Image (cartoon, rainbow, N blue to C red; front, side):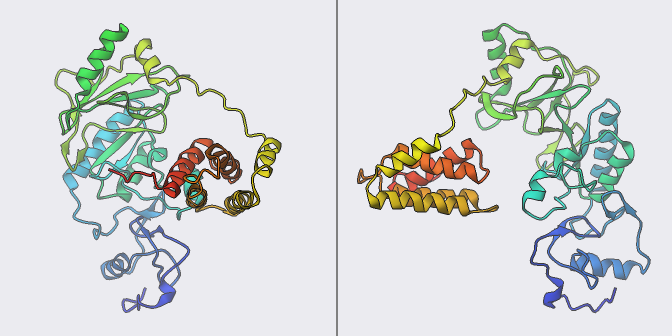
Length: 378
């Protein structure tokens, strides 16, 4: 690679989106002279360091990437990697985290459906909790791909333990420990002795085992104000990690080898009641309701519904919000029935692939914006 490469040349910029740098794995829109993703600093450091291409590891990144991402905390990196191996030896699936407690390796996919739909099927790193594994070689490869990692995440809800993580916050006026004790008293269960991790802010992570068929969502403050729940698709910061706030470690007196079953009464609290079935919108009835409006409102409804239906990914939610705002301007005058506006846009929005929940939330906010009743975020 020529050291005097002119990185100002437009040919080195890929407008289709970011891709993982071939040297460090972090996303970049830049391409080298062979159109391979590469940061300028990465490419020049590699050229200066050696003319022999270094060895790669699974995931397509170097075993020893350059350090332009920041100084490597080798001690924290080694502690986290060792602790991750220990957790994996107990059957817990792990992946590296940065100091921010977020996945250390960015997505290898540009923004779009591929990024949303790939669940590590491509074999590369950068899929967050979907990268979690118990394979020692794969864990080492992931940590070598992220020398800035200082922690690791433990995927919840995976066999064999089907881990439930209870994050008991003790900050900002919350006390998750007291909340859990209150729930235990109210619902008649005993909080079992189980592996517990102390967090830097004084909180606790309780590890509980769930039945294989248990299904419950991740949640924050739903069960109780100071209790966050991590289940399938969620993760906990593992003991031995170092985040921006400090170290994570097993709480004094806890037995790391014990993962007690979640009490049935508590598991029931974590599982929300089934969503009532909402009948689909009858297209013929909706068409007749629109037809009964005066010509001006009928045209407005038809126009906005057609505009929403024509919008493709990305931008569907933005288009739906804008159309709702356009119709919302008619609500204060009383010439447009709000229920009809909601149903018209809901039918159009769901036709684009958005979920009913996404559509309802977006439409309500858009109508409020158009009507001038949307309150600004606090």
